Image (cartoon, rainbow, N blue to C red; front, side, top):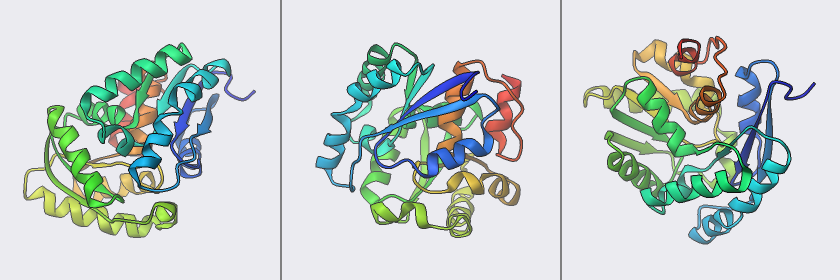
Length: 243
């Protein structure tokens, strides 16, 4: 039976394509994904406003579908509003859904803390302004972002970048950041296939890599007491079995 063990709700800012693909590559049996989308169309601030304006309704609907946890995806939407906004949106989601909640960026920071990293690099598909906002947000939250590089990909082409190209880009960022003392590399964004590169990047560079998909579902699994052994997905997901 679908979701017989746990059902995780997900609020996507745009279409759900890479998120479920990633999720079902590592989710334990019986854990299901229940998603809704806010259908934003590009990087413009007014599109972010549109997406954020739908969050409470989306969370309430997911609560009515019996989910056990809710994730709000889309880091740029949250970090663009500043740190205080995250507290507001998590509270809003929890109140509307009746279950625990997190955001993509909050889960990313939880994942970085779980692997003991404070000096981090960011490798993203984002435009420069979103990398700067993400860096500022992490710095304000106790991290030291030593490098942040983005690919400035068009909004509707994020999913099309092959993992091999993501690997080459991220490895370059990591190698440059190692000289600056980076302890981990954070790869935000649910719309590119970054999770597929994590295990090999860690083996090839010796640096811990926290991808968006792993961090968000690590947070959910940990809160829900799902401690199954997950292999081949990097250090963060492997750590679940030790929590």
